[in-house]
Amino acid sequence: MKLSFEIHGEIMDEIRDYDIREGMKLEDFVNQTGSAGFQATNMAKAVKLIERMKKEKCMIILTFTANMVATGLRSVFAGMCEKGLVDMIITTGGSIDHDLIRSYRPYLLGDFVMNDEELHKKGINRIGNVLVPNDRYILLEEKIQKIFADVYAKEKVTSPSGLIMEIGKTLEDRNSFMHWCSKKGIPVFSPGITDSAIGLQTYFFKQDHPDFGIDVTKDMKKMADLVLNAEKTGGIILGGGISKHHALGVNLVRDGFDYAVYVTTSSPWDGSLSGARPNEAKSWGKIKETGRHVTVDGDVTIVFPLIVSGFI
Image 1 (tube, rainbow, N blue to C red):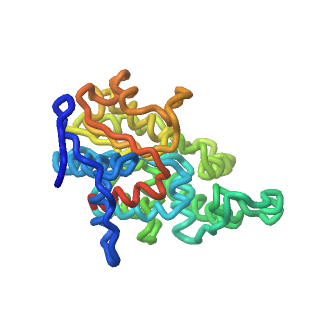
Image 2: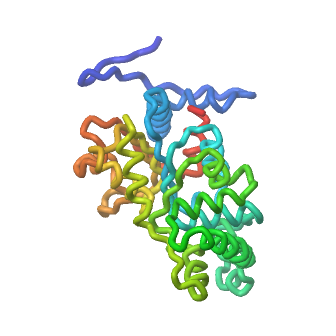
Image 3: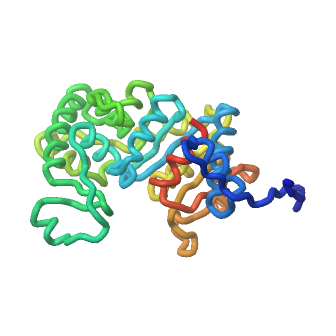
């Protein structure tokens, strides 16, 4: 017998046990999470909210940070772009580094506890339990310097989104989000692009081409125009940092997001933006007072593929 009751006008369902069966489809599992409790229920709410964004034809803005692109999540972002589930991406400069490098060479799996002094001697960099040998950055230098030269021949000062579109055109890896963004015309904004290996390579290129530059302000009008012309906007905000802040900030010009889904491991108790909850964004007008939102507290490498499997 199913039990339910009402609190403040909202129908409350009963907690139900999982029914895990052999040969069970992932979608069937995700459908059970809504009545499981804790973050499983919030994850199910996130699926429903994104489905609502799609149904109401919201402009969907996806934000993520560089560390995520160093993991298997990279292909999830690419798949969303391929299927037209994203209208805009805002990310950090390191995401561009990782997506470009992994289009040609793989990263390696390590551990969270390793002899880091020994790794340094061997020329291996660690991101959590992901290992990136130095030769990957030599590859990046070879690729990006050629792209800089091609861009410089067309314009002396480019924008981050313009540069990223040109990088995407050179990539053939179907697991690259830049590859699909260039094919589908999805703008990728990276307001902190110089805080990356590509930023360092920009410095090297400018030694011989002092009039070359990446002007982050060139993207501001383009981004604002897209948001202002959207009937509704929905944010899928993975992690925090400049990616999250820029997405929230640009929505100020239209009185805030209509919908927002956050996935985070940060806490709100230190006042950081990364841990700030959607209700705090309402105080700034970055999410509408009537905006619908949900926060899922969990590791995005686990949570987000499950969310995507529920609505894709």
